[in-house]
Image (cartoon, rainbow, N blue to C red; front, side):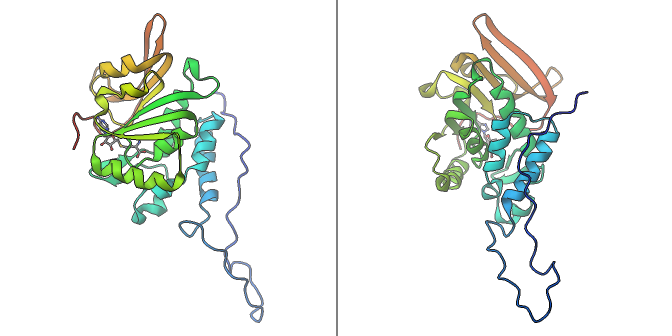
Length: 254
Ligand code: SAH
């Protein structure tokens, strides 16, 4: 298999910790650099995460750049901040989880591969805002992002998490995403962060011709896998890809 080409990201080294270079005792140490965010240089930690994503096959530069730019640690609980850049899903409250960075990057890369998306995505619908992390990533690769959440507590949390980012192209909607969001349709991309048994009819309807849907769905054996649906002039083309583990897609709001 061909090795994925690593993009030339500036891989910054973490700053030297004060005290690691042996200074003569009499010379006072320079003041420690002001910690950014979580007391570590989070951009350097993200750069390493991005290198791992690239090595694992994420090649779309806009996706890698978005993963570099969005500070995932701002979307998780303070107690989990030190795990924010590990490739792991993390609890975000109300029994829900933020997806692993590798899964977010994979799904957004698939979305960008849609036939109409060659020059960047137009309008995108996300089902399952959760903490708002993926919406922030999508905001960097799509013109407009409509993101729906059925749990009011998480919808409010996402709003609070995203406020400081001032992303004018992200629209958060409290509501059941099973019916999609007709006001923003047709969408160049639809991406679901919760797994169901079958694609709700509204998602097929609200997808633009040339658009792509990426969602976790149950396969014939009831195992969850990533489903990619392309809407063409001649109908829908569907592909089931690798196994994934997402929280369930549920009806109604709470
Ligand atoms: N993209 C999110 C991941 C959230 S987990 C992030 O970056 O944090 C999936 C979310 O989907 C959960 O918050 C869950 O409440 C929500 N969800 C499940 N079914 C839904 C539905 N029918 N409509 C809207 N949101 C739904």
